[in-house]
Image (cartoon, rainbow over all chains, first blue to last red):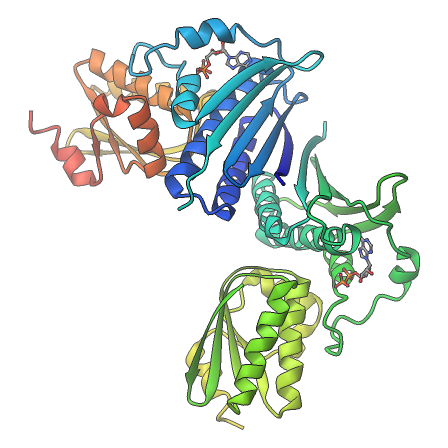
Length: 140
Length: 140
Length: 114
Length: 114
Ligand SMILES: Nc1ncnc2c1ncn2[C@@H]1O[C@H](COP(=O)(O)OP(=O)(O)O)[C@@H](O)[C@H]1O
Ligand SMILES: Nc1ncnc2c1ncn2[C@@H]1O[C@H](COP(=O)(O)OP(=O)(O)O)[C@@H](O)[C@H]1O
């Protein structure tokens, strides 16, 4: 039976540290290798940063909701914001080169895609964007 | 405007560590003195332990819900379980002596009462027990 | 909870690490205490320095170890008590029950002084 | 983000601590970079050892510092890159852009080698 951990927090950058620590704690409890744990935490932070900045436009009264689902052989994380979403189908087909140093931003989705096994987007009616990150697990 | 942080997690002792860390992180962000931060974290852990053991009878499929409310001059924490509650009015009038070493358990509520400025209980219909802890803040 | 037990001058030193919080930790610790009694060791020092974490149920585990040892004319003393655990001891006045030390040598020597 | 700036053999060492993650950190760091350029310092070592935390927006801050310094015939190199930051650099191939060191002396000396 999967276990769920849910966290909701205001759209403020300072809470990302807490999210990072929670990811690390859960990964440790699941016995994941540090490298895998880092990839998960980094990706979750990127998803939360996007929810915060692009989805919720940094309005602290808008919450970000994160649901971690622990399965024996998989961890998946959903991140919800209250925004209007974006054309992710188009974006996913033309992800910019992350090593292009003319660009200061625009590496988040690339990083999530590289570090996780699956990433999917959905615009949830009367809600906002939902990003789902999945990683299949190799125990340490 | 107060800020709310909500965490829901399965009734397993191992998650208490995460709760402890989250409390510490939020206390640090609020600039609380370490002593105050410790008192809050200790009390929250006691409330969660009770929700887990007495309220949810350690059934992992039953969640514990914790809501942290940050005000500029106060922090309050609500802890919800799915249990039937207990006769807290009676209990609060006869809190056992915590230094009685014949008793192995029974110090949680005493500790919360000592370390927080206010503790209140409520049996929420169709839900379970709700314990509210409050602490007025002195900045470090 | 994880543990490691050593002996020094007839005194058992139990080093605890991880989390101490009721549940199965309680029976594991009771097992440790009775193992010592079988070996006729009644003087115990519990090193809490490696604990990341304790709650009042965990304190109860130490209390039951203490009362068991006292019943057998022994004692259970604490070593390396963090500030967080100290505040738990103070608020419950259990600091008046448990002798505690910051130094292993002193903790062990305290048993030869009486 | 917190920072401290020092100079060593004409090289500026910027020690970062806390979190580096876009938002206002971006303008603060840009300010640091332009302060150095005004003092005609173009060679920079950024010590990441004290950072508890970075995201891709934080990486962007370092990139913009790097491109600014390069435009002025200087460079921006990294010191004490944690494993977590290393994996961010590798996956984005920015490790090919940033020179990085584990030792301050070497980082500073690397500027006198060319
Ligand atoms: N949750 C979201 N809501 C709306 N737009 C988003 C969201 N996540 C990503 N985007 C869009 O996708 C773009 C690329 O995101 P990303 O790769 O993370 O880089 P960055 O956030 O640095 O721009 C963003 O600039 C934004 O336009
Ligand atoms: N959330 C709860 N639901 C049901 N009963 C509770 C709850 N919290 C406390 N209690 C009751 O109050 C008693 C005292 O709690 P406490 O002082 O924390 O000590 P302990 O949990 O060690 O017994 C418990 O033994 C239990 O019977």
